[in-house]
Image 1 (cartoon, rainbow, N blue to C red):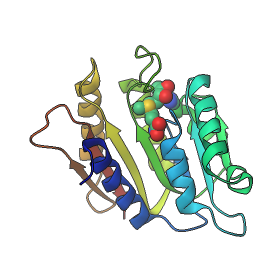
Image 2: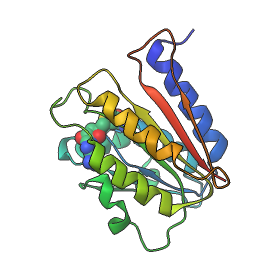
Image 3: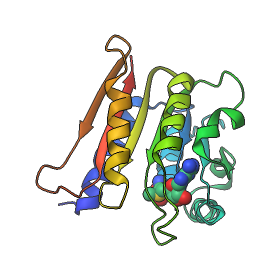
Length: 195
Ligand code: SAM
């Protein structure tokens, strides 16, 4: 039996694993405490030093936490495959080399657990980041989002994400969401697959 949070994490990792290959390039658009960065790195890092995780967060505290978690959980060689940037994810295209083939862009929206709850993702920059992700993703790639609805602005952010996904053409994209029906405040998972 998995705890509530772990059930969703388990599902997300299953979906990521289904999409990712060793050597892939992925983006963690909201590094936070680094758990997603580490999970993605483990899936893409290969023996010969291929695979890359580009991570970003607007808080240096979050990037420091991510860096510390990497030190504790991965080898130095694996850590070298991670590039961290103290920027808003709406600017992701500025830090990745041109024409980088990205297989996964992962968002875990909201605030830094254990940090300042006033510093949260916002509709406007989330939408800009989704537009940037859409352009960078390769065929067969995935935009994955965890959207929290329990804090002020969370529901509106979910509506923005849903409107973005609903507007994508059916020939090019498969968009779906996973929602806990008996837990209305549980985060909603949104998966946007590029066909
Ligand atoms: N994925 C993280 C993990 O595994 O620990 C948790 C992410 S946390 C829920 C959300 C993070 O998004 C916070 O660290 C926050 O600073 C960051 N954030 C908020 N607005 C952002 C933005 N515009 N660009 C990048 N990161 C942002």
